[in-house]
Length: 250
Image (cartoon, rainbow, N blue to C red; front, side, top):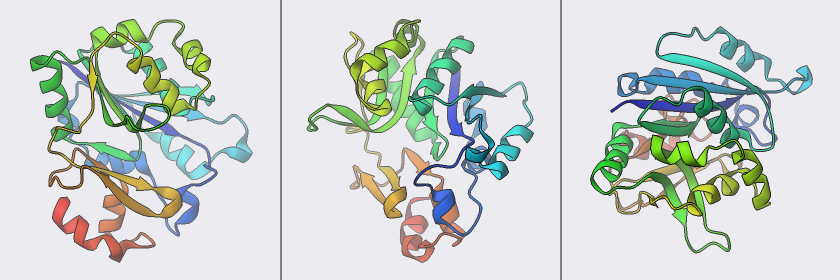
């Protein structure tokens, strides 16, 4: 079965950004490409949301992105930034590369593992699921994926990613992440999350400079935040704080 990983990134400066909070250069796409097992995928698409005004561009990161050399496996797509950020990136990438059996949608600061893929594809093949999110919060006033890492089948995306997908997200009147999840949740497709996976999902909160965990009683990780690799090198502001976690879970 063919697999496509779509990585969303942004060439600008975030309002609350790890790039601004830390005293060293952070390059999540570089970290991702260096540590991911690229052999797991037939194609890796990097979708770059771009600012058009130089005063909003992170020049160092933008230069790196421009210098990424495309190969048969790694491709780049450049799109002007919009209100839906990463979640419209996934849509536009799928429109251009719609020939694969399974798709995985990740923002640049999370590294997918074979654990994530194996669990997802078991759901797709053996239990007839059509999509899977990281962690779905069913207790929130609006049900949504609090960890919006996504795997989905071509059958599901062919239907959901129709020409009016962006307009449908706008109609929800919710923020980008919730609007994206709603399109799946309100469809007739069968979905799930990693609650029963026996895998833990780490999540890095930039504004608080800390990692939290969903399903933390589990040992193995479904994903790695890129911060794990910065922390391991003790270049992060609070690097020593996470030594025990890194030694045990990477």
